[in-house]
Image (cartoon, rainbow, N blue to C red):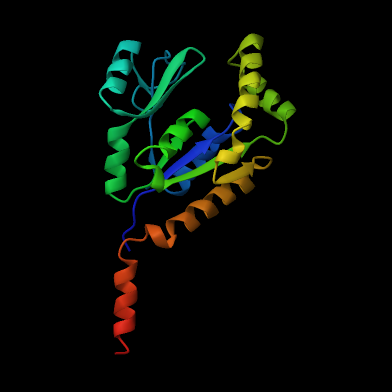
Length: 209
């Protein structure tokens, strides 16, 4: 049965596991479209333009915002991030779900957009702040000052947990992935999303007439 495509927002403090969970969810269901964000920050080692991010200048980014081509956008640690609107609408019209790896600001803008009725929002918490800091340090990518800034920002991120439809504590990666799968399966079966369900029920009723 046809249904409308979902906009699945997955948010968490940096280091809580949303990137790993996103990859696992995509591996579980390859039909998921991943929303590749645009950003003005420079690529990190190993990042590929168009795959990890759409890398652009501040001028190019501003032109996309002014042209209404961004579904959401925000400035984080001095760099601009945003979601190009076109690919999301294309996926939705084809009945494909789109997965967003965005912060609370991006999630809020998407929920408040014209596409908000199609949103399922999930916030991922770390088991503790100490564990969150350990994960950030184990990456080996950032200085102590950057990590301190990320930890401070984490408190701001966590304060918005109640704005989300679902909140998961990522103390076990496999269990959290299973919970994500359950949420996605249930939301796909929601009556309001299943186009043509009314016609199916009417046909069933007509069989006894």
